[in-house]
Image (cartoon, rainbow, N blue to C red; front, side, top):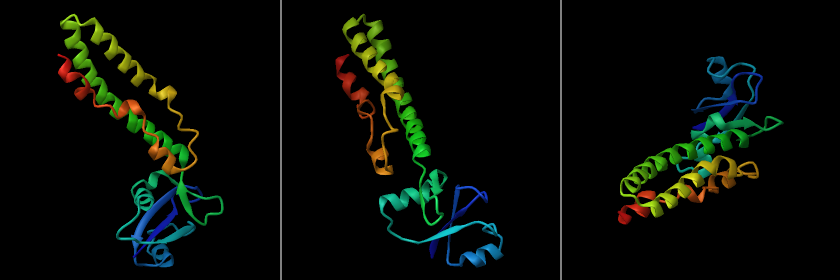
Length: 161
């Protein structure tokens, strides 16, 4: 078995993946791979490393290098994916903070309201303060987790009421 990354659509740097024991030529004859598509073959690994696993599960974020001799992550697309992923996590954090904000408001806890509002503002600012464009490798992008998203807001506030 081998991983075969190939151009799809034809004539673009976009990538599709098929895992097969057949050759590229056989797959072209079967019309699985478009006839004029370039292809890169990589060994299939039953125990892939993190980067290999990421490449096989995020094929939509891959592109061919300029010489069409290898595939690599499209860092711009990968950064957008991480940004959207962080937005989803942030949305869940807002739900928790909104609940505690309502409780603090109902109890007249101005001190807690100020802290919760500060946390919410830090979350809102994430999309403008997070610098993913400075990352030059997929690993740098993956490791650039905003501190504000690592906070368990339920744990932070539950004992304060």
